[in-house]
Image (cartoon, rainbow, N blue to C red; front, side):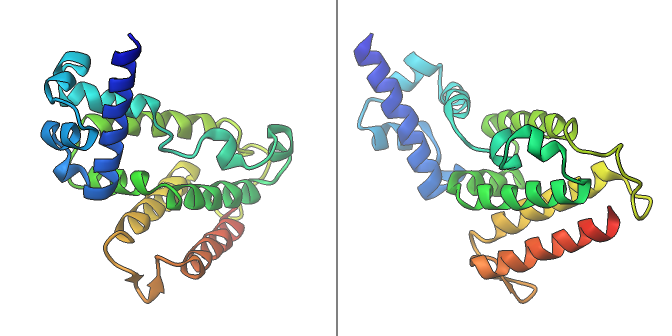
Length: 200
């Protein structure tokens, strides 16, 4: 049993390394087995093939910033903030959380061109987290400065973060803003904050 667990861990770690280094396009049974230094038949024996390995990898990974990471402070303190400030905190922490996760950036990029077991699983994890966050936002305590659909505002903001972090894999400048450097992201999150203040 110990030997099987060690081999499973080797395969899961190898899948992560192949993903981070080569992306989804190179993720295959042969590549993972070669990276792990084991026979590819073990992927079928222990995981029922590549799809099973990918699902197992997704279940044990820390791909998305979790609830506590996004809030960045105790719940009771976060709940006391006005909606605009809550949004600023969440979107800044989301940006920083994604930028420090190379595998997440790889997944976001691949999600734009192909749906697969891993992206579908992680999409569900992300959606559940988003619904949970909506329950702690102070949407009922303030009258918005303008009439605005909060869910749509969040969707536009998050999709912008996802797209620009994914693009930063291959390009360094987008619309004159350096998207591989902290200074560029400070401009982007600062402008997001201004939008939240104006709208909320």
